[in-house]
Amino acid sequence: MTHKSIHFQYQCSECGREFDIIPDVYLCSDCAAKQVKNRPLRGILDVELNGPTPDSRDVRAFLPVPAEFFPTIPVGNTPLWTPERLRKQTGFSGLFIKDDGLNPTGSLKDRASYLVAAFARQHGIHTVVVASTGNAASSMSGVGAAAGLNITIFIPKTAPEAKMVQSLQYGASVILVDGTYDNAFELSMEFAAKNGGLNRNTGYNPLTIEGKKTAALEIFFQLGHVPDVVFVPVGDGVIISGIFKGFRDLIHLKLADRMPTIVAVQAEGSNAICRAFEAGGFTEPISSDTVADSISVDVPRNGVHALANLQRFNGRCVSVTDDEILDAQKQLSSTAGLFPEPAAAASFGGFMKLRGELDSSADIVVLSTGNGLKDIVSAKKGVTIPANPIKKLEEIQ
Image 1 (cartoon, rainbow, N blue to C red):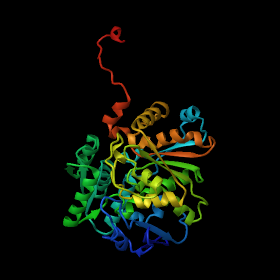
Image 2: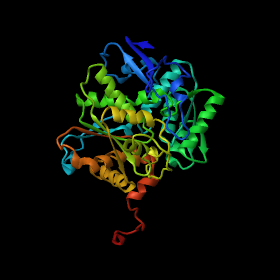
Image 3: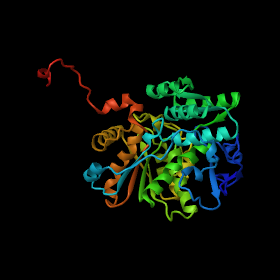
Image 4: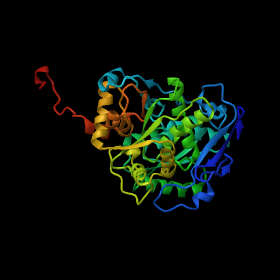
């Protein structure tokens, strides 16, 4: 696939086999044959690019679909905050927050949905299927609405109601699953195989990783250089693989000369990738239990790929407790004016946990991936709701 003089192709992240970027190509067929039940996907594909460096700083110039196919919805170009009070409070003068909760549907997942929607339009595909704990579902629903696509989503019945309501407002067909995200993933795969359409499942569709790399490109363009450390909340491993991919592309195109230290932050109750990072590989899954629904997953579908990136580029992995996540959410809200959902606050929780090991003058980017209004139930756990309404000022206690 070629546009703007750049050639794009899929390449297996495990064996290096190359594939054309066309519908119905999702995994490397050779490596996918090695798949083991209850383990991360094998044969994840990366989008490799070759050719001259784009003159444009429009991140779409670095993506494998021509710009004219993208829907007219303002995805990306989210702000890189310079949180003055947090800098003073923590002592880190180069602390930044990349606020992807300001994407149209309130989460970073819009970056993946945007590229998937463009690819569907390019190839005349009208239906997209996705499994999600909520954000990918509402994202694909909203971006799909702007693109004129029919969206079918599978979400666990335990998903935050706000995310389900979002998807319904956008006009998606919503199927509630009596089970976990992993159950929703399997059912969505069966549905797509039976009924057709483009499968947007995170990790399984290589474009989900490719779309998310744009956050890294923006961080680089906004700072004007590579940051020293980037903290990323991690569930299934696709966002962090996208961040690695973005910096890899910048290095490949000779725009950047190094990879930052990228830190995977997981909820202690759902930390399969951190466990694998410590052990050197994945073992039997453990049932997830965390307030951070967006990064709650038993089997991280992109786990093998994410682990390989962490190992290859000397990344780090840290787990944070639910209490640390809720504390981070409250601190971001009350000190910076940023209200993230718990999964998005996890990255700041990871920074707070590791800050004693970091250079206080370093450029550190904390990636906030979703808006707190998407999960009010969880946010209520970190605050005290007034119990007694008043009629007169004298009743204030």
